[in-house]
Image 1 (cartoon, rainbow, N blue to C red):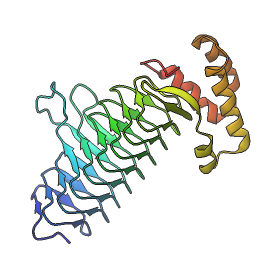
Image 2 (image 1 turned 180 degrees about the horizontal axis):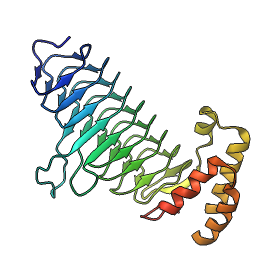
Image 3 (image 1 turned 90 degrees about the vertical axis):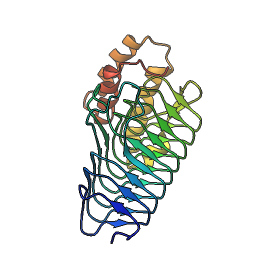
Image 4 (image 1 turned 60 degrees about the horizontal axis):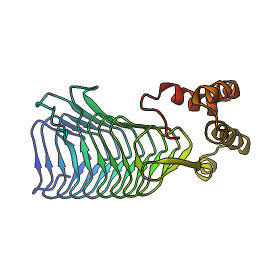
Length: 256
């Protein structure tokens, strides 16, 4: 199932049913799981591990060295889960020795054309990065994040689960879960309530999330004051517990 015009290193390990299109190049130390389709003109370098049922379209570059001037050729990795789609001209880089040494991508994600995931990023599941969305190094994205076209995240920023980043938005500080962020630099706009409804959140859960948003962004409270109210509000409410934990763990400050 490997086209005769493809170049596959003897040091690569491909499951028996992996399909590789013409003129693709797969280097050593690349592991590809079952039912994965690799189109024509794809380049995959290692060390890279790719799970099952992924689809990689033409001209994507997966597992290349990090675009980091501090990188000195250290052995680092890229780990990719299952059922991801990488469209045309995606660039996904390996990690660096100055961080975890690995770029990690979960499962069920869609990377549209020209998206870029830099070194040491950590991405969860069911994420959508629209055309030309870009992540700097060390960025963390939670599950179900949507990044609009031409949006970008500054290195070391974190974007919480179910957040929505509008097109052309520049994320320079952390975006909490559930928040829609807009602008350059990004500012909080509202709660991603429509996305939450589509993912099965109840009306009561969405109402409580909106209440937490108002405490953080609409009451004019200092962050420490808002945190006191939010911790009380989150007791026994799992959908708010993650919101509060994200705020506590923020290292770059949050969009406000």
